Length: 297
Image (cartoon, rainbow, N blue to C red; front, side, top):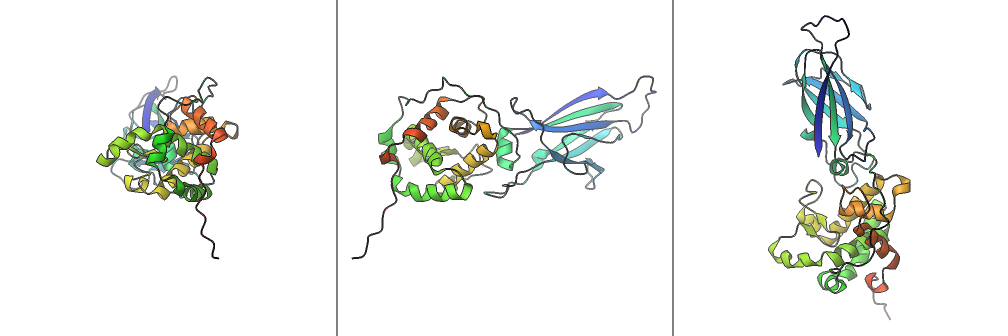
């Protein structure tokens, strides 16, 4: 999720006498690892000597690029703290961990160009904002697949309970109710085949929102996803984080849904097109109303 790329260039000026001294430095940048998400990520950083707790040098606040002072030839510990969003604590606070600490060798008369690369997955988990770029594909199909099954969906889900959960999750995360419902219907009508694994505890994804628990284990647990209210909350939370990472003009249902299905997607898929179609065509029997309390006579 967080990778380090280091390259070196000579920092010796023409005619300079090379000496064994404090003559090594580093230029530090933080950027997305996904090739389509190219904008730099603001960060703060601290440089320490190996085995020391006290800071040797720091960036003095958030920057987009930081060049250290020149230091002796050694291995230093670089602690990078990318900017985190305002909604960092809205669901589950996942603090920056050891993934953001790196050992960087400083070499004599060389500048180390250090690029800390943040994946889309890490951006979602730690709430590190940057823009996800995804292209549209107008050939993506909105039509049902051969394995789409409304019948199995009805047999494997307690749909009358959905409205109260959807309304609560939509309100908590400011996500449209119809979008949450469309994703739930998509996952239910296409993910019914995992029902055969359910008695054996073999499901990696748990309907109705079908979050992949092993993949997102820092955010969700299997126990949480087996609770319907928390299941809808998790899906709404993921949709919120995706929406925040798309520019206003890119916040289409097709793109949001495609990224929900595959956070590393480069272009809109059939999944995204099908969810968009659900948004426009959901039938009334797929949108149950909450039960009405009996009136006292």
